[in-house]
Length: 260
Image (cartoon, rainbow, N blue to C red; front, top):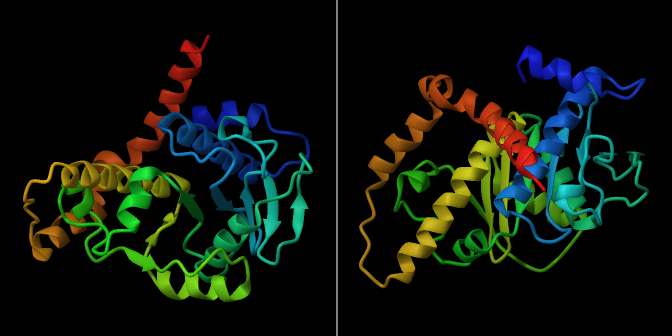
């Protein structure tokens, strides 16, 4: 957030709330609204979480039962990695499966301040393909040698599943959950959103390309790695990455202004 945006957000902050936490809540609620806008939802399921600033092993996540467009900065649930609810204004609690996935990553990867999980048709389709995500587009080449895979062995919400998630993710920021969906991490919420947007686009395009039945051209790993390195470069961040989140906030404002 820039100084002007931060000032506006802080104007609505509840009494006694830590300002840093409130700003994170505002951004996280906005992210849920963006997922709703782009159609990356599964009714009341799936989840986005962000670590609570200055609080060890605590994160914010959606209350189970709310639609994404009903999530606000005020009604987010604060929970720790042991499953203890710190605050829950709705009294609705959190989805056990969501807690398992997000607590596993927040526990093992302090660099992953934001964790996102989706079940979109395109990502589920690609997750079930033997080859997974292919280097068919520039969007997809961004993830060359930078994507992990987690096999589907059933719907489990226990410590063993958390250990499997941690092991399979390793030091990567992106993982396809076979026959299930996605897991995307970010050092910031904005970084995670940027990654999720292009992962979704890559999967959508792969499904469309493969549906044509045509023989497809896949660039080499060397080419893919060069493209991935470009996305990670400081130049890309300064020329585009830092502008993405403010642009998304403008999109939400424009959408709100045109709402009936």
